[in-house]
Image (cartoon, rainbow, N blue to C red; front, side):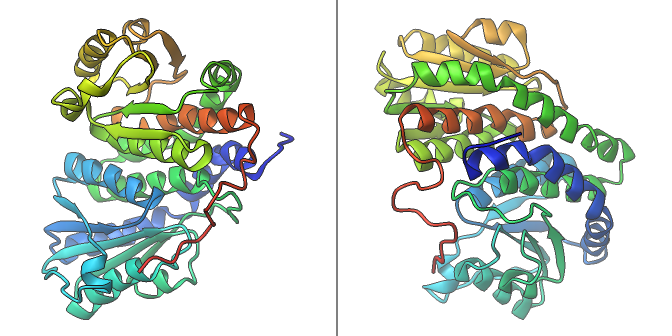
Amino acid sequence: MKSTSYLEQEIYEQPEVIGRLLEAELENARRLAAAIRARGVQYAMIAGRGTSDNAGRYGQYLFGAMNRLPVGLATPSLFSIYAAPPRFGDALVLGISQSGQSPDIVSVLAEARRQGALTAAITNEPDSPLAAEADHVICLHAGVERSVAATKTYTAQLAAVALLNAALSSDPAHLTALQAVPAATRQTLALAPEVRRIAQRYRFVDRCVILGRGFNYATAFEIALKLKETNYIASEPYSPADFIHGPLAVLDESYAVLVIAASGALLAEMRSAIGRIAEREAEILVISDDDATLAAGKLRLRLPVTLPEWLSPMVAVIPGQLLALHMVLERGHDPDRPRGLQKVTLTL
């Protein structure tokens, strides 16, 4: 496909990237899973920033639901600024970073290794400082990512987390289910013409709420981040359980509300939340594979494939990526030059 920006090219590379990762990294995932069992790991700590932190949120749900492992998200400044790292004990300490360069994320793994904890990295750069601190590395195989707004490395990070959890579960059905993801992402990219029409309608939107829960809580955070990075929109992610408890009061007809509602245990709850939000006269865009849920929204993007709920974040985020792309084009900005941002941010 001929593309006008790196952002667009990399959105469309995602099926191939995920397919490469699943094929190339299965044995590495199995080796890490074996080490987790052998070490008697009792919980996981995940360190990441930005998009990688959102992949960590997905990991929180997936490690818990599939392997009953509690997961915490690291606070890197305890390591890099306060010099007061927690005791890891019988933990898996997992760093997630596209570049593997951020000193604060590297410092988490370095301290974990010093304490004797099991360390692992998910990164696109196997020769990076982060990878050097890891006992095990799962590489993203995404190729060079030139777009400042990450897309292909985000879904690859999700795929890597899913692959590790499937290997750890020892259920062959989980690995079989993963093989359907590349084709599902390819089919979801066909939503682009519908997304373009919605982007024309949303050209002047400047306030937006993104709602997702469970496995797709991470999706809400990632779509909100993409809209902030590319379109400078005040977009805020929430679980509807939190949103209904207070922030609902800010809504009026000037707000756009995106709801990610993939089939699964939370579908009825998401539909109920849409009903509450509709009472506030906000314009609701529903991203779902369920017709009854889609009917509750004013605008609708139907996911063409129904995956198991634990895999749905890899397709549910794609309409949000496409929306960010086409909105920035409608606004006349350069998708590859978001103001004030650069590709690698070296946070301390």
